[in-house]
Image 1: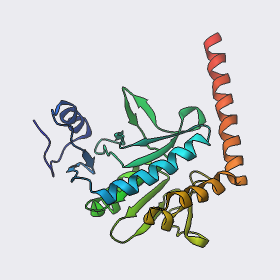
Image 2: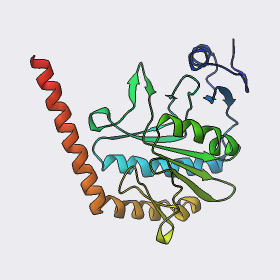
Image 3: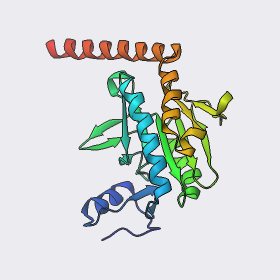
Length: 227
């Protein structure tokens, strides 16, 4: 049976139908309800590309981090979203998400949605699903309003951009996002801002912690294998 917008399903049934669908259109299960994605416009695609570039550069400079684009995530019995972008820690470095048969299970630390036609569900149903599942930080780029809406679930606060219009991630130190540069398509300026974050002491300390955690996890694996 094909998926239909508004269907009420469990995560298992949704996933079964999605996998058996001959046409792999983007479909998500949010709070037990199926949402079928509208066609993506050029503006959405441009902003998505810019954010992808920033997350890719951050991952390249940050041991123990992984990013994905439009990857399905199983979050619970009524939740299987497909966020525009996410950034996560690897299990060895303290991440809580795990890959099972090519699908991510559990919450990534950071989720980003680019909201146009999906604005209502991104700011409400998805936000609640992500918070319940344990996502630490959630960013929604509102295309029409030309602003970045941010949610820091780890502190229950909704932080605003710092001085200069630069958003500094709490889940990933050094991930600095120049909102105006991203919105205007000025990727070189956005990358310069990110590079400043990557060169900050906070980022250096964060990577040091991740490397130490990775070494300890590997040592534990070796000891277990020898027993």
